[in-house]
Image 1 (spheres, rainbow, N blue to C red):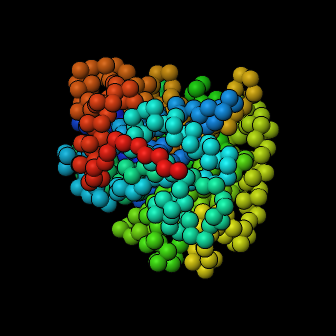
Image 2: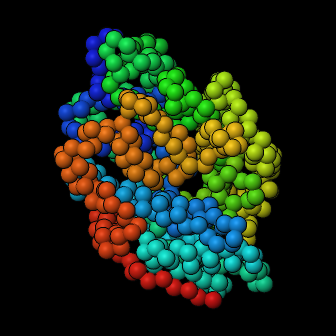
Image 3: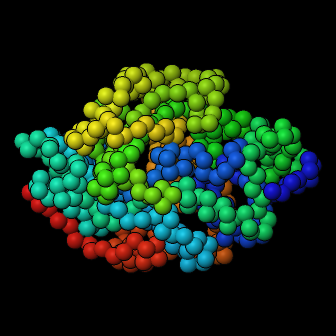
Length: 510
């Protein structure tokens, strides 16, 4: 690992805090756009992708909005709003284009190790939920990105799609499901580590594990930012100077952003939500389920807690998870401190956090209920998706921490957001990513937005524009409104990523 002496001389052009999927994506984009850039990456743990990007810590589904019902809310008039689902589906297509480019350039050699085809399904029961799912299907069919989706209320059809979900289910229970065969399973931990391995070998890039960024402030003499970094192994501290700083530290981003004291950071708070999985240890059951089956969240539940019976490939082994079960912890990271939440409270965000709490009493009640669940309670929740589930076939696995964004609001004082948000300084010298789902799957589009904010002059050059269109062919276009281009790019990326082929026809069966 490279070492630098403490110095007031100009440091790297770019510093990335956190070795997760966001920093990996931004680092690769910047080196492809401008190969002579120098980049330092600091990670407080001893390996990449050990927090939110790890496969066991929730980031395991290629979120393309095919099955996640929280992306298609039902409006007051009963109609379905597909806007967020369309945006996420388009963003995931950008991610696939970028990954395909990296494979074609020899940057990634192991595509089958991080992305695989697997059906994405939505499953509901009860008359009202069946009606909702049918309306959702009809609304999504208006956009070609969701063509190929199948809808069925036929128990025999559903039993063929997901046998363990339908076995021994009450035959009088109204049920419905949608199925999208072009869904994917993405191991973002494997992808992130592969990207960092290649970045590490590139000239001008230094990757420092077990290095914790303790403080940061504007550099008055040299411009840009200074950071105080501690080697947690030796306890030695040094100062680093950089022109551009990206804070991609997952749940740790909020505290570091607050240290910057930029005006844009004021008023932001964080609400941590922990998670747990039930992991199937019966290999016979694991082999009988081959799908990601998502349902509807309980009343008051955060979107990250949408229950799903989820097939994943982790380290070359097929796994079956159910959950996540939400919980509450004052930690902002799985490896964080219980003081993370209280230390994040400042005068500028105290009011928004209090108001957001008052507006989200059902969420607080839900989290208390989740924390107090017994193993039998968790099993009963699983049985709604797998009626024959047995407690001895499952063990508890601790998932990652998610810190939902709290921000100021003119009307309500403070609101709790369930997406991701890039916060950047007016001069573009610093940016931080806050929030959670669907972050990893949409990392490329998030980083493209960051480039627009922080590197506007370079982004306007012909060199950067041409390179971006080479890496992401749909760049600069609204892919959702361009079926001809979108279908062609889907075909290309599916071939490069080894995802097979598919047809653009949708089916309905009663």
